[in-house]
Amino acid sequence: MEFNTPYMGTDVPTLTGAVTVPDDPRGLVSDRATVGCVIPAYNEGESIAAVLDALLTQTRPPDVIHVVVNNTTDDTVEVASHYAGIHARMTAEGEQIIEIFVHDIGENKDKKVGALNYGFFLVEGYDYLLGVDGDTTPEPTATAELLAEIESDGRIGGISAIYSIDDTALSAPMEKFLVAGQRAQFAAFNMQSLLRGRNIAVLGGQFSIFSIQALRDVMRESHQDTPWVKDSEVEDSLLSLQIKSAGYLTKISATARAHVGGMPNLRALDGQQVKWNYGAIELMWPGQRGDTKGQPFHPNLRIRWFELVSMLLNILTRAMFITLALCSISIGAFVFQWWWLLPPAVATILNYRVARSMKYRNRRDTLFALLIIPAEAYMWVRVGHFVRAWAKFFTNAQTDNWAAQARAERGAGHGHLYPYAVALILLAATFAAWTQLSLGLQSDILAYAWPVLGIITIAQTAWMGMKALRNYRGFTV
Image (tube, rainbow, N blue to C red):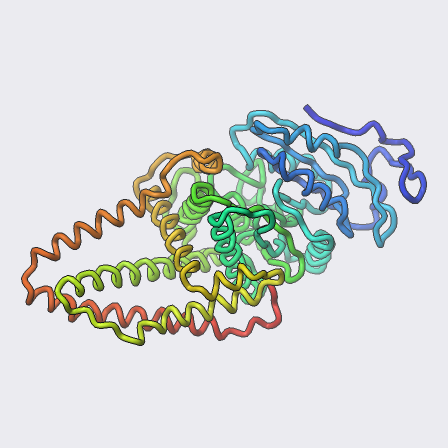
């Protein structure tokens, strides 16, 4: 089912009088670059209207918008169909015509990837493809800023906006906590990319603009029939790697901003993050899994390796501290040291600096950074995602992670609790084995293990300190 407009070749009334719409709206903008927008939409009935409103009120709107609805079970098609047709808008460059099409492609086994590729062939004749998620609302100047940047340098294959999680209309304490954590996580990632010469590892599908020529080059060099392929759990990461390998730059904008929907509950967040982590592991891991070749030394994956090492250190230091503290208490050898407060203090300073760098920070962002406990609790949530993703990878579990995320967003499943259940079992087993050792051996183990933990913690704290002291060079996220 497709919704089009009856107005082609006719006069359309506007606030400034009638304007004649040619058979191809691109004829109005032949002297400038053309932008075709593709919105893959799956159960976006609650948000799609806001997304289309935001696109229509851009200072430089896309020339055409294709809403590609797939596998949906809600009223996305009905809501979006109200926008189908010709829209005339007055911009700084004069009157602009935007045409919106709504395509209901029904059941689509390739899910978002299939919807994106469907949209690509609809806008292949344009200069640029603007990919927008069905729950992402850009700021009014976002499209103009992305377009200006990508036009300014022919080496750029794609540019991503700065993303922030929308934290409006939250009511439950758990929702507020999880979204605050996601906002901090996005802010830290964005700032890291900005400070790396604005080179970004992932052109996020939420709101990014791509050169059509770059996408064609990817298809040719990778022997693909489409820009996006279903081989990876993170289709945007894989495409970003391919764009980089084709000789283009992948950048993050310093000014264009978009607000994306957050995951409001533990199940939904787990489904999303496990899928992201699993896909990243596939791209990092040497060798080949299925049709996806691991590229451990690809420049876009360096940041992934830093994230991996950082998360492993976070897990190691926390696991060692809890285990050693319990073992020390069991034999009356626990002695508190004041310098143990330094790592959380440095972490708090770093978190506060990240919070201060947010353009639209609020009181909740600041409290999340300063109160220590929320940030620490969210770290444990991320540890669960990390462990689950690696467990799936090493067991070679054949799981449809897209479907798993969809189920989680509907509130189904308890997989997000498994890592913590296993951790408790391991802790209990370790403590049981500990009690079977002689007092002398217990003392020797503690005498060696505590200094090892101290050395690791000192190195980790020094690294956090250097990150906290970095010059942000005026960037905001």
